[in-house]
Length: 614
Image 1: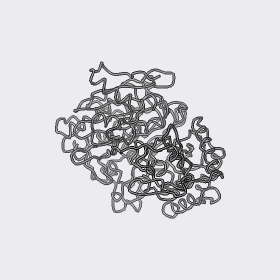
Image 2 (image 1 turned 90 degrees about the vertical axis):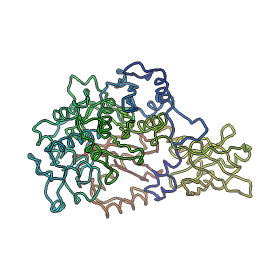
Image 3 (image 1 turned 120 degrees about the horizontal axis):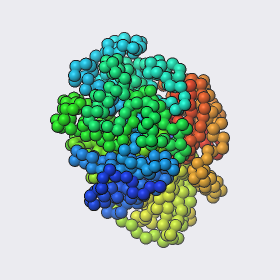
Image 4 (image 1 turned 180 degrees about the horizontal axis):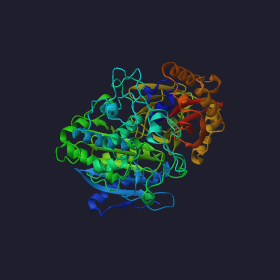
């Protein structure tokens, strides 16, 4: 928990001052682990770390079991690479509620991690002379062409641009198709024709001039590979990549063959409810269709590492692997994101399909991890697990940030009692200070409680957070009138609420706590969101429906960008999926040509205070 987290999120669109705040038993292992390794796994399993820890002090940790329960994640599978080999692979939890345990062989949807595996096939064919990364892709496409327009008149789309997300192609990602719904062909997806649920894929900026993530570009790549090889996509990927590097459990077949369904984890929403009908089907196989395991994705990562080091040429040469991992625009390589220092560079990709979230990180020199989950909230858990793995293995990145240990003093209860109260940080965002067992406890709106240690009679630091809270001296000796949050080199002053207002806020906080526990929507939220969606479709946001700051933000967006909502067609359904820890009600909106996740914060007056879209 971090005081900056909620404020950064909630104030981004409100005051633009975000810069101020910046079941389970043991799991299933493939083989009996040595005692030392088993202890290492236990360290990770039993002590999931927070984002910030204090040097010289034991961090406040939680168990993987508890985090899975809190986030409604039924199953997790992990593979860890160390010194160029899979050191361990283990499953935790269950493939479905009430079902069998997750094992290292359980299949998950890799979602967007399908893209870097697809990229490897492209690069292999480029090395064999069948493709040119710098040529116009239309010279390879036979059954469809990238539509010509003013953006492609002088600059053509190339494979290199498709792999690096610089081709100017539209369509960020794909919601997939329920198992019982009609599914489009790849050509229908490309053209945005029914029953496709996403808009047409085309170029809307000059290729090579900007970076913008585009799953649509990888659908173009999928068709191109089929046209060049004359093979169905799942077969060509097996023959070129999956087979040669030993990804024996993996397949791009969509839907997953019926005889393999029992091997797969079932997907769940953030509120713990199963995705109706089970796994969605993705005709967009290249960007989203890979079924795999963490161990198989680890084999992919190790093959890249070995090729990069010149120790394997099973799919790529050393020179091509180095080209693949060379950072370009927005630190993006050929199909993968890149990061790290000059001494310790890494490559990475995440993935999020309906009910599945996962992450892959691998250093160029031989360490890495793959984490796969069967929940929409699994991405947050994967980040926590990766953080803990990085700490255990002493990686230079991803581990918790360490802050210096501070000298604590004892402050009398009479002095501490003066600071108890609720302080307004911003509209709808308050910090509540309470006193428990002789210690101040701080709680930001929508976040958990954090003990605060005294550095002096007027300055306190939240445990495990790189911040300081100051109560300026007051000659009256009565209740403190304000506090100042010092964080990230900046200061924010918050005034104490009057007793009547504080009582209302406390009541609202208690109501939210219950609503979050029960995962029930705020009254009137769905109706307000429905009206806002219709107004956005008509490009006419209603000032009476939302806060002045949200209205102003939407107006600015209208002036700068075309409204994408209108491109998605008619709204077909709006479903509440849960309450986020930051206080947002989360709704999934399904349109004729797409799916959008809305997060809204409803004020006491029934207006939408803030909103964001994924």
